[in-house]
Structure formats: structure tokens, C-alpha cells
Length: 458
Ligand SMILES: *Cc1c(COP(=O)(O)O)cnc(C)c1O
Image (cartoon, rainbow, N blue to C red; front, side):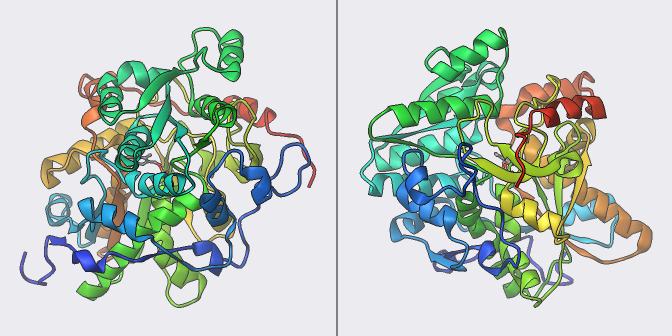
């Protein structure tokens, strides 16, 4: 292992944590399409967004020009509790695969929330506090975002109301309790606490909920409660901006080692960890300074990039949010009930959607049994029990490494290991009992989702 002197783990020093986030949009020739007001179909202005989002976060959302944005001192202090995160050389996985490829992963599971989501949660809570708000509302699917936001809100003394997709609320009682430990108020969605929730329950009695529906509820509560705003843990430009800390640290660690990755792989739900991981590398690519292969990995059961349409769509089921242009399956799309692996949002970050549309990155979809097989193979040799979401990236990284074995190429592969899977043991149990199946929506299934796309002519 000492041959090439690359350590198993590379940590930056605390004072090497980036002090600025990097905004890819500044270097994009084709900017992501603006959010539109669903009523007027005109780009949303800061004033129109103000009742929903925090002021400073709106400024970040609309900022397509500043490449670097200072990370406030208070956020940097919090980052120091769990950052820098390690860049790990997966020697044991390489050996198990008998591949000439060199595999690295950036591990974001080293905090209580168990994922990268804390990087943005703490930033959003900070700006809410700075604005003098009482609290924030949000949705959570698998629960990682709600947990991260609960931690961030308790740190700044903000009230936190979480709408949790009902199926997760029931399947993951311990996730819910972690949020309550940090003082959050957790409601299963759809609920009868909102107008939109009542409407959805009427139309679909017995529904187990969806992210799009929980978003609608959280937005309704934020806009109807004084001193509250809505915050979102993925998809938005501001979230990708905060998550750039992942990629900036990874790039700095690689630079220290004198290594350059050839292939960069991340799982894609709404696109925030991937957008953050690739940020500085994509920046070099956009500026023509270097080239990287960048691969988004999504579930075959929720294939926004690989089978979705690039179109303006609603971000939520209740159609209360602005329209975003993105790769989407339609806001009414709900993945099959047997889908256990997370990443179930119908749309995708508009920034990543534009980059994908412009051929600057690729996407693949993988089936969930193969994802869990990769997760267990990884856990057994590298020790970390990965989140199902992260395991999509593991699957693709293993597949790339196995291709290298065939061709003899010594590629350097970087993937994002976004979090740990301790709260996903029901899904692991299904896999271990041989009860997990793969479901790939038919074209007909997808057509139903596409039929709900807003009929607008731009
Ligand atoms: C939320 C989450 C994801 C997916 O969200 P993105 O915004 O696409 O990054 C991936 N991994 C983990 C562990 C998560 O919690």
C-alpha cells in the first residue's frame, strides 16, 4: 500500500477548509433557465420570491455572475465541527475488484445527520437567523435533510417544522426521533394541517405521500405563518452553491497529492451533492482548463435525466412553487412503492440539467438490487455502511473500475460517498431476504407523468 505513497485518507487541515463557495453558473456559457412565475410566465423576481425564501438565499439563487461567494465566519465555525471530510483512497475495494483503476471517494457521512445535507442546512439556517426569522419549514423524504436542518436550526435557536413523506415517517421512526431530539416538529405528509394536504388526501385516500406533496405543504405553512420561510435541501442553485464545499475540498486534497481524477461520479436525486462535488472540476472544464468525465447516477425507477423531458415543470405536486426548467418526469410522477433506495424526486437541478443538455456531463441509471449488491460489497471491504442513495454512485464506480480491468486502463475514479445507511435497514433487510425487486417504469407509466407537464409555449 505504501508503494505510491498515497495515504488511505487525505484530510486537509482545519484552516484549509474553503472560505468561499464556488458558483458554477458564473462560468456557464448557457445559464440555467430562470425560475418562472406560474401565473405570468415571467422570470421570478427577488420580490416575488421573498414571501417564500430567505432574502440572502434568494440573492444566491439568482446570482449567475459571481464565481466566488464568501462563506460567513459563523458557518465556517460550524463546518469545523465535522469538516474537512476525508478523501479516501479505496485500496481495499480496488483489491477486491482486482482492477488497475485507482478509486477515491469523498466521504460526507461523518456527522450526526449522516449526509452532506448539513453543509447547506447550516447555511440556510444562518441566513434565516440573520434575517431575524422565527423559524423555517421544509419537507423531508428519506429523512436526512430534515435531520440536518433540525441540527442547524437548534444550533441557531430557530423553530423547525418538517413535513415528512408519510411512508418514511412510518418506516423510519428513529429518523423522526433524531429530528425531535434536535427540537424539530415533525408531521407526516400529506396531512390535514394544510389546505393542499387535505386536497391531496381527498383525491388520493391512503396515499403514502411524495416529496412533491410534502414541499407543497411546507410552502403553504411558511407563507401563512408570520416570521417563517421555506427552505429546501436540494435542487435549488443556492444548495448546489453551498455543497461546492465538497468539491473544493476534494480538489484541494487531490492537488496536495498531485493527482487528477479522470472520472467523477455522483448519485443524483435533486442534484445537490453531485453539483457540489463536481463544481470546481466542472469550472475547469467550462473554462477550457481541464477535462473530466462526469457521470450522474440515478435509479432506474426514477430516471429524470436518462428518460425525463427537458422542460419547464412544477417543483411540487400542489403546483404552488415557481416553474423550473429541468429534466423531469412530471410533478405527478411517484416512483413505484417497491422503490427503497431514495433519490425519488421527479425533477433535477436546473443547473445540472443545463450542463447535461449541453453535453458537459453524462448520466446512467441503475436498478436497485444491483445498487444494494454494490453497497454490501463496499461495506464488507471498506467498512462504511453506505446510504442507499450513495450506493448508486458506488455501483457506477465499481462498473467503471471493472471496465478498466477489461481494458487495462489505470483510470483515476472519484465518487461521492454522500452518507451512511444506518436508518435504511428496512431496505437492507428486504435485500438480504431476497425480497427486493427492480421496477422500471414503462414508457406508458412515464407518459402519465409527462401529460401533467404545464402546457406552456415559450
Ligand atoms: C439527499 C441525499 C442524496 C440525494 O440528494 P442530492 O440533492 O441529489 O444530493 C444522496 N445521498 C444522501 C445520503 C442523501 O441524504
